[in-house]
Image 1 (cartoon, rainbow, N blue to C red):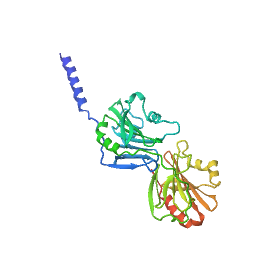
Image 2: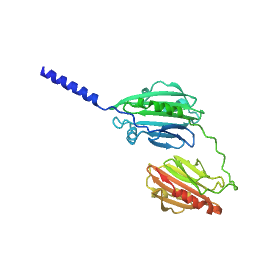
Image 3: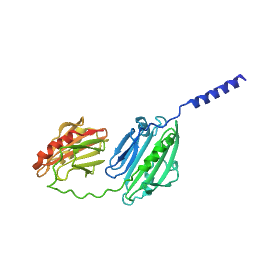
Length: 341
């Protein structure tokens, strides 16, 4: 009898302790703000106090906290019961279908997902799927929405949360979905032309954001997609007066080579820049190297190389010698304004 009472006591103690275990709660949202991609024009409202990681032209990923960000890297069984928002846009290359995009956008095995349900997103027909699986602190739950605005770019939007907390974000998810603008293919840019009558670069600077950096450029300059084929992303900052006066920032994968000196002393790189010798300098608080050379008649150039994290930044500055006094001083200010994230 005593043994039975002891076992029953232990059983009830376990139940009490289990019931006293604190349940995961949704993370705080202090307000909403809107992000718009400058290239393919997708946009959505999102929590203003969460961690925002944009990749211009293709993606924005938002985490509720650093702990959530770390856990979502591998979907760890234990950790912060945080949340993630991920909007991903991709061009539908020739021969690729929207259905193939939906299949490849998934992070988990197909059997984890519910059957697609038709919904409306940004006024367009769309599909929704839900998915979930058990972890140590409860269910990891997610919703994904797929749509295309023009048949050329497809967009997928993921909402995920650990610890069975996704339901706690539903009113915010509804607000975000109502705000979504889908990605679409930008109009083809006409070839740059030299407009002699246009104004020289403004002395007033405005800050623009790129893939892992910010830079201040003349307020009468525009930001366009750069032409670098070896880059993860490329932005060209240029005015209307001259096509040979610009600043271009290329972001290149540096995971395979982190030795900046080896990169700049590579014969292939030196050959691109008139076999000039790179000089040590610094940009945005980071060690850097710079080449100075002339790529063409009456044009002077400087090319800077700097590594931050797993990214190599190549910054090219070109100016017309005949208008050096108008361009070089302000371009040097632009280079000094660079900050890396």
